[in-house]
Image (cartoon, rainbow, N blue to C red; front, top):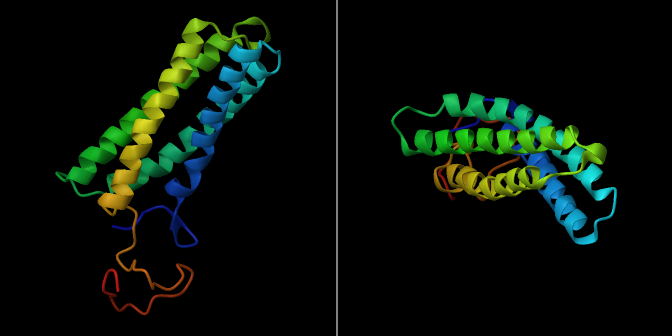
Length: 167
């Protein structure tokens, strides 16, 4: 089934998810660097990248919800999509709690709970990312029915003729 929210022939959700995922992972890297070096600046960078990642995740989630609603009810794809989406809501909540705890501290210093939330969030993001891959790679969600190894560009106008998959 094809994505319902598209831009120039491609699903918007898969395009957008790279930003929050990269930003949230980068915030965890900054946290680790801060813990190793105790240098001021890393914790501030972690907070800013985390904030941007949370905002990006909310935007990507809107388009993911649009696509999920189009998946037929009672299918494995619908169940996997629900776990993927709900898991990502938990990821964003964990990072939001971490961000709020830092916001109330001097110089955005993370306390133990803030670090636990962000570390748990990135581990869960790995699981939900795998579920998203399962939706696309295994279940074909957001993949065009006309997809094949020799399909024309998504910007090319379709002739309306169905193509055989994998040909």
